[in-house]
Length: 390
Image (cartoon, rainbow, N blue to C red; front, side, top):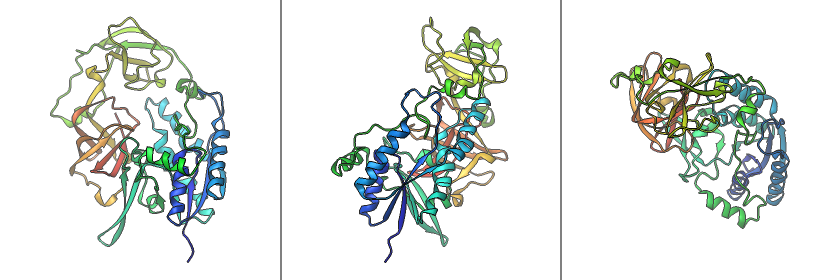
């Protein structure tokens, strides 16, 4: 009987290495595939190019496990589908999540196509999440579940996957914790057992964001306006539509306290990079206006205008991992929500209206950022997600 072939995305990190090992132990025919998605080092905080280190570790792991390692350059589609989107969103005053886009557009699309060329029956990654397939109404449905390690659960990064992508996906370490993964790597003498986890933009690395963005977005000086906490921007707490709207900041509501180098370089909730002192409490970004190039800030991490009770997702930006559980116009359902990676799940209700989905949270949420993804869960299953239009 022929073994099922699994192509594993080997990145050089410990998670993908152990994923390959676990699949071997489960009896699969395992093949490694290393992606190179980025060549430019502009804006990188480390002068060293991580590619050389990554491919070296990937080769050492593959040799240790006795598996073939192939390499593919996907820098073309990565730039077009992820990085160009990132520039476009920042220019429009939104803050995208390139890791979510990278998974949807590259790892489970362009990369999956390359895996098929290698005869793959399945595609595996080192994500800390789980998949379960069930049958409902005579149809096989694929459930995307949170990883068992609460500290490392990465299901949020996969919130834009669809049923077709999940059908052939395997997540071998979703049942393990990070310490268990490292212990397995040490026991198998994998070279990357104690290698640090990667940080920064997916496949680019840790960057100085303004420097990176200035590849396409020009710096331009503008005013920083401080908004007092008792500003008149009040909301009707009984009006869901009002609660989900962006705050209508204007310069007349506050005082100019400094200059910035471009409103599109900043995001709501940001503290670093303002370089404005002399205040009783640190300043945080509470709003941006990229059209007028104005940055609005407020004192203290608990400034009331840093919080919102609701958010809005346009119909065209609503995505259901489980289409059979999708809400129709006029329906509502309680979910657990996450609006950024590592955030604890938050209670709330999703209301589907003519123009899209409105999420009303039980507790006000800090730094609800336009362009990010709001993911919604039932218990530990990720049901869907959408781009925040805030």
